[in-house]
Length: 447
Length: 61
Image (cartoon, rainbow over all chains, first blue to last red):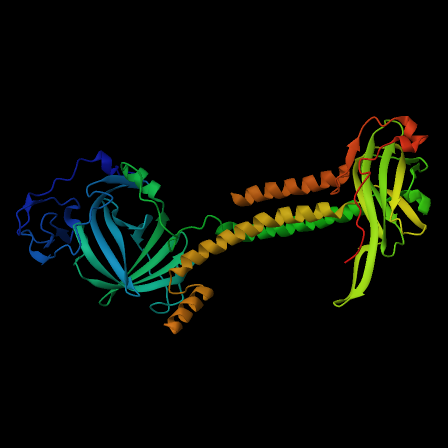
């Protein structure tokens, strides 16, 4: 609050003159001192000239629908932007797009020192609105963009708005049925609106507010109506992050590649065993297990890769392996198949399997090890030579693949959420997303 | 807010990847046993392989 300006709540309530509606005689209280231009009788809905001491009748209207009850009762006081305001006027306005009427509500708020500001509400979405202090620049009515205080606003919608219902005091000549050309430009969370009535253009700037903020500001009972859909200047919960997220993702990917290169360079990839064995047909029938020489693994716990190569041709061999620590009795037991089949049929040539197989044993501590190998083979397989290579400390590139996916998934989800949010926003505008406009035009063609 | 979370999350992912690589994590699942008798070295047939009796693939397409 500005220095030296006492809060409204600290002031005595304004004393209104004893006014009565000239039409129905109901008492009328003016809250905005001399600033009201028109005042509406709450009983008979007669619009009166507030500047006239006799309250000349300007217009009388029938509420076309049932009387609208303001969500913020007139006379309610609340604090907005650090200043106390009182709700003194209320109007319902509507616009028709493709034959469908869209209604919203506007509230006139008044502070004797700060003047008026406005609140609008549409489907639970609120805006705190004030008249622009400087003139925005737009090349023409409905131009693609408008500029205000160094910010660029995108054209959202142009429509004719009519006033359907009024109540309370207004600092302008309000009339029911009055039509104004309204153009909205958005730069969430702000909306820049021009309202053209005859030759007069009024620019206002609004900032999105959540219903809960309004309820807290005016200390209204209960809960605000739930916001439906996405409003034109509703701030996206994710949009501001999308670019930053992708920048971070790119940086993480670079780090990941650096990690991969670093670990690949520093991995020992130390061959600790490379032996070739003869598989005899007799091995396939009887006990054929044997053990290799002992080899030593040094350093910290690391991976051990066991690679098997066998020149099988339309055959298989299967090797029961056990990597056994000679000192501790700890063992890693696994079976690996090497099979390779190929042929030719009506679909052409085909092949399955490979003549090599590799497996990576995780986190093997240093120590003295040997392999126990128990081969099995296709009984039709003639004897063959197969080789076993054991390499200590090999990089596992799959870990980087998983990390990459783990980094990518949240970025994609966020981008998708931001995209769908913006798509919902702009689907209500004069510039719907391309696919929506195509859909509507194709459905129009088919009719 | 989410950017901060993503930065922390990304740092955690990278740290986990680096730690896993250093500790020798693998994507292969290997059965681990303890206290294999030392006699296996002299008598390999005394060890019973976990994967013995595997049903093998016996033909191509």
